[in-house]
Image 1: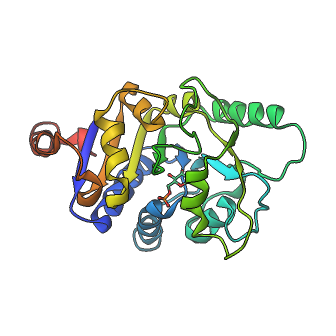
Image 2: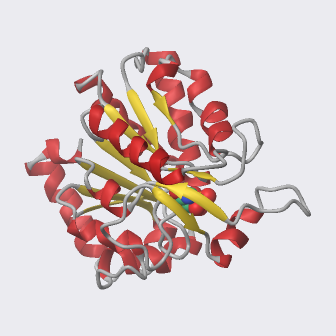
Length: 264
Ligand code: GLP
């Protein structure tokens, strides 16, 4: 696991976008796994800038989003469909046929739908680079504490902590979705490379648990310790509770000196 410490949210966002951009340039037909959440906003902004100013080309890229609230139509202001359109897809040259976001509005058979979502990922050749944020309770996607490390795309009931955390994005008095459809931990761990972004002091505790704590389904992001190519890109505030902070700094310095490709 590589831990990249960045002095600010802006630098964290630039670094994440740089890694995505290099991945897309190296393989224009790459398959990306995408995340939503306020943490990812700076990265998407920078990717849009690179598209506009540096002609970063997304026309052959395939994307799969991690999750969507159950019951929210695509046009709902808080749906992840809307988030992705507003902050990324509407501003770059993605082929709409290559965009996949779980549908939260199917009334019926989610089991079959989720199976097909997994199949579509496989048919696309698997996810080359998966972007993740992290919930305050350590969730990735909407894999709440106690989610199985073998889990696949499915419906999940959200914890009250997650509902409270995300309430700020909804209109006052509006009913919050209590469930979501999310890729599973097993699905996420199959990505070839994983990039988790975290910012701010409110995430410091859970980031430390994910990176340095025991591997446990109680902090689902800790599963990334099992992944051969997972990178955490975090700012100073989110890194505050890491015991090995100085070690990560030395790893960054020496890796940049001896194996610069590992950082790109
Ligand atoms: C939601 C999403 C997660 C995201 C998390 C953190 O719960 N399902 O994928 O990582 O929010 O969001 P934020 O970046 O706003 O803290």
